[in-house]
Length: 180
Image 1 (cartoon, helix red, strand yellow):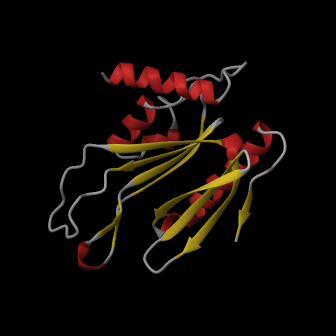
Image 2 (tube, one colour):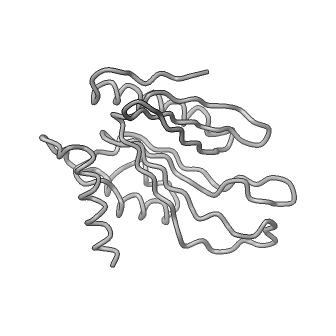
């Protein structure tokens, strides 16, 4: 079923992108960006990469824990392609208290088209930072939030500024600007 699911996903992404005229050569398998990542994130990135997309940048981080070893956010990765911002996150455990590490097999993958990027904001909190991505569609907008560790703030900011620039090149009209 995975092959059927991937094919359906690729077709949906192609329709959202209005079928690219000039497909880019894929570089996912040989990317230096993915080389140091945990195997799970590397494999999921390659398997669910949008067809004919080029990987431009990426950041990966581990789980974020709060008091009493409570998981605040699962391990995740933020990827930038020539067409999308992709967020890959592990499943969040169901229990409130985590006394020992449990294997996590599922992942949640979110594709955000660059041509819908309106702005982004990075906020600092006590135990983590938050990336808020604002997208525009028609007359409204949507917000998407991602928690990440403080030590990844520079890398996430770099990736989002690059996404803003790529969004300017892909979409006529509005440009994505960081909100502080």
